[in-house]
Each structure stands twice: as structure tokens, then as C-alpha cells.
Length: 124
Image (cartoon, rainbow, N blue to C red; front, top):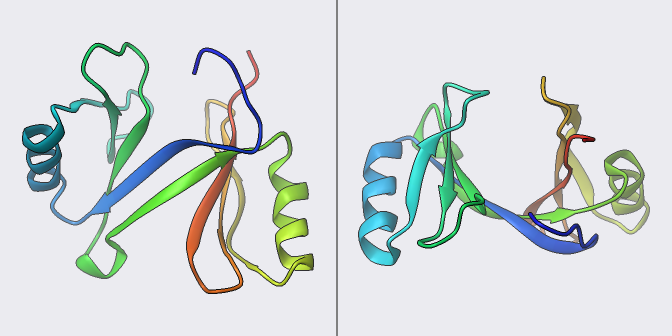
């Protein structure tokens, strides 16, 4: 991300219990590139051809019941956005979580039960 634009879809994630297979599929279909996330043994970063910055990731799921494709919205305050989601009738399915590098994220459901995520990047 070169510039931060809050309240925009800024990341996507594909969860798969067969990550090598799904990486091969999307790599062959769209030419996407994959590298292991240095901070996690079970996550790969996705970048587009001719792009140096990742735009998404592949989460290694334990089994097929957790396979998913989800978008994530960049927000200035994950906890406040999660609270507002509940106030508006949505649900928090994974509360705000901070990774070792300072990234904060949460997973939510909208009022139709659609899963999506929110995140704030680590402070620089």
C-alpha cells in the first residue's frame, strides 16, 4: 500500500486447506505471485505481476470447512469499527486481534451473514 485510504477494500484473503493447489490455480489463471509471509508459517502473500507490494494472501486452513474468499477494508480503528458493526446489526465473529508486527484485524458478518474483514496496518 503506497497511500492509505481508509474505508476502502485494500486486501483480500483466500483460505484453503489445499494452499499449494489454490496458489497454482490462481497463479496459472491470473499470473499472481506468491511468497511466504515472513511472520507466519501458514500464510502466503499474493502480489500481482509487475507489482512489488502484496495485495492479498492465502491462509492455510486446517480443513475444507474453513475455506473462504473474503475482502478486508482498511479502517482507522478496528475496535471502533467492530463496535459500530454490532450497533448497525452485524456481528463480530473474530474480535480485534493484534499480530506480532502490530497489524490489527477482525472478522465480521454483515446483516445478511456475509463475512468480511477490517484491518489497520502496523504503525511505522
